[in-house]
Image (cartoon, rainbow, N blue to C red; front, side, top):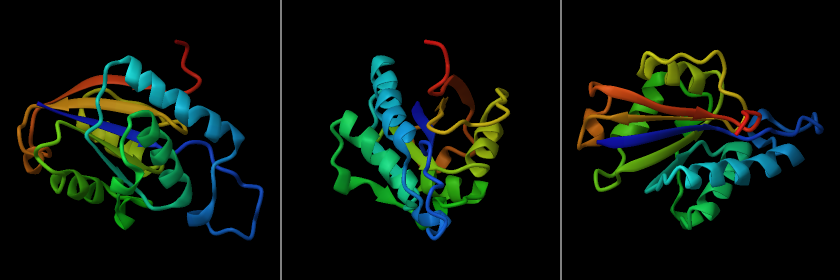
Amino acid sequence: MKTLILVRHAKSDWGNPSLSDFDRPLNERGKRDAPIMAKRLLDKKIKIDQIIASPAKRAAKTAKYFAEAFDYKKDKIDFKEKLYLAEPAAFFAAIENANDKHECIALFSHNFGITDFANMLTNTRIDNMPTCGVFAIKADCTKWKDFKEAKKEFLFFDYPKAIQ
């Protein structure tokens, strides 16, 4: 069994209109929420073996907060350009290229692609993946290349404003 954790980047700052979408940083709420959500994953006894992220500033920073919480070396984060504003094929490609020795991978990306992708994987549907939302599934496979066709099971959905 393999575990996939999908994470939408934390809340971003819209205060500087001269910045490109790609370069928008996290705002104060995003900087607060990312470590909290990482801790919630730790509390669920999740162990992330590999982090794959969009290189956009807000997604990269969110991934780094999670890496810090999980004692994952930040320089080991695998940044994939195609996870910025990704279509399902980009998510599947990132997953299928993950190292098979890793039992749990976390993907950090953006809406609307990440919500659409989460909704493709199981019968559990969400209207929207909020900022710093986490959607987790298990897949009945031993190799990541088999993930797409594997039977999948919804594990949990969490986000910063969810009552804990």
